[in-house]
Length: 249
Ligand SMILES: Nc1ncnc2c1ncn2[C@@H]1O[C@H](COP(=O)(O)OP(=O)(O)OP(=O)(O)O)[C@@H](O)[C@H]1O
Ligand SMILES: [Mg+2]
Image (cartoon, rainbow, N blue to C red; front, side, top):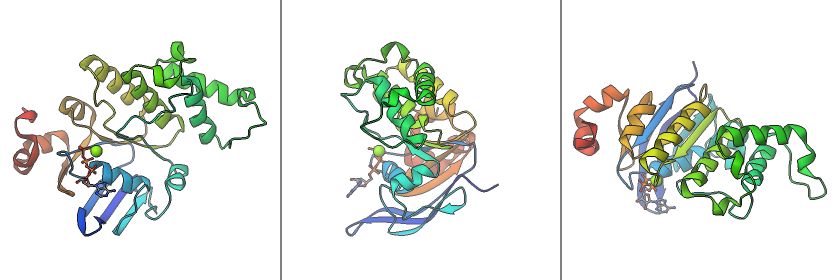
């Protein structure tokens, strides 16, 4: 089967600094794939390259077999890829309801029109309510997103990322800054909402990575030094030396 994502020989330079070097990555349809690696390894840059926020200096990226490198983020989004950012990225002054509705409107092809009352669209209302239910934020629907707790904001963001119905979801450190209990809730949410879709996740919490991922890639200094199942990664001596150390045990 055609992979959901295929990165072939991608390089990225900023000025004369080479940040991503000969990056090759293949993510199968329906797979949950984690990218791990030390700070500054290039994980977020890899996300930016795949989702079109950066274009590769060379190499090629495919989504469901079609070349997407060179396309703009919204074009890649329309082809079924949705990503979240490492830093929380919700509209702070809009309510929880409005934040989700915005994503639903975009996903259902409605473009903003100031003379229309978007709450009159029954399918948009229904889908928005459904997502709020899914992310357990129905009781917070009328609260401005900026007033939510940090964990609630991250959950809202996961909801927004997935709201569009994209079949490839990319989450950049979705549980960063969460308590242990909040992390467990978020992982359950991610697991449920990405059921039957492809997930690429950057994550530092090894219990999340080893609990969630079907496959793991280890990125060190802009290069993937190993890709494999959690067992293969745990047993890989190169990985132990470069990154995992004691964490895997
Ligand atoms: N637009 C840019 N211009 C110049 N250098 C950049 C740019 N974006 C990222 N870098 C550099 O690229 C390297 C990789 O950054 P990146 O954010 O991808 O790392 P990361 O693996 O996501 O790290 P972290 O775990 O801290 O989030 C860093 O050295 C960073 O300073
Ligand atoms: Mg990062």
